[in-house]
Length: 457
Image (tube, rainbow, N blue to C red; front, top):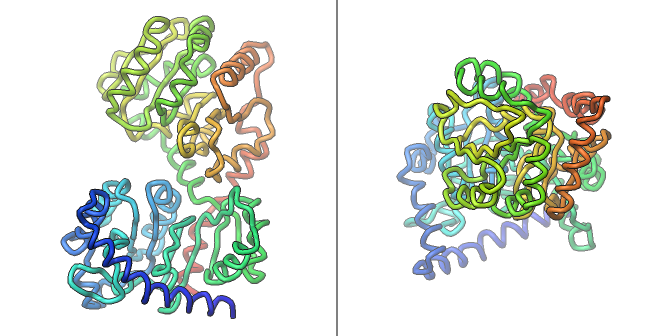
């Protein structure tokens, strides 16, 4: 009953209030951020990957089986293993609707590879209208899939109202991380979660908190990215065989005397490259391998160079070709700034200690990638938005992970870690931990069985 009332409220808001906001956005188009967003959404009718006008005309040959709603790149990465499994196993056609401009290129590139089976749409936020009208865009006329997959958040009312069209709603990576379930939120959750036919919880903690709102349905804790990371690591040798230069470079690294930094921000560099930490790297012959958060960020490269140049050699690598004659020696500690995309996950598996950037910004980047690759993980303090950190931080091994708050904590961890490494008794490998092994058990063909269940229901 509460769910029906919730849908009525959403319908009233979407049909009565949302159009008002749409016209207000159009009136304020001279504002830079409004114009940019409107121009972004105006690409939909002229983009061959959208099939926009064909769908409005309801041509049956453009009907699809799954529609995936994602906010930005992080959510796309969460569901892309499921997307790829759908395309592989069921031979279905899919739709991808996305919110952020930041993921536009990535999704476009993905559509080009699967152009006969993937259609895309920029979510009309400022141009939304319930029916086709001038430049305004109706979401409902475009979405033809029977299975609607949402990821984490961006639960816009026009998306949830697809339930009224007989669609099956599936929620991936459901989380209530670091949010208190107060009275008003409890009412919302009681109306919200029964809308979904299937839910994948992001963690056991989320399952415990949210299970009571799903009307007694026992949904699993599952992260589709685990299998994707495992597959990439398993195929790393194949990737490296195809690129002998990269293979030779990585195999010359001493994992006991090195640190890899994935997705480095300037705020991370301030913590890592203090004079004390640089001297520590030099004294213990520790080489540092940097993968920047943003490729071709000249300002960041220059910033790191100025930080380290008086203590350690600095080498900037901008292409695979530059690695041809480059070898790493443990007695010659160096800072390597690797400005190359697409190889970070494979590279993690050649190291035993990793620092993941972003923890001094809004949120950390993927910590599952280095962890599943067998590395102990360091990161900054802002882990509150990362459900991956919940999974990694359950590891029971000593010195296996740490969220650091400042340069002193980072230096203290390094001293403990490398002191332990240099002792006669070796540290236990991450792969031996119960937590690590339990993560791998999430897979074993379960993704394919979920897809089969959705298709047959």
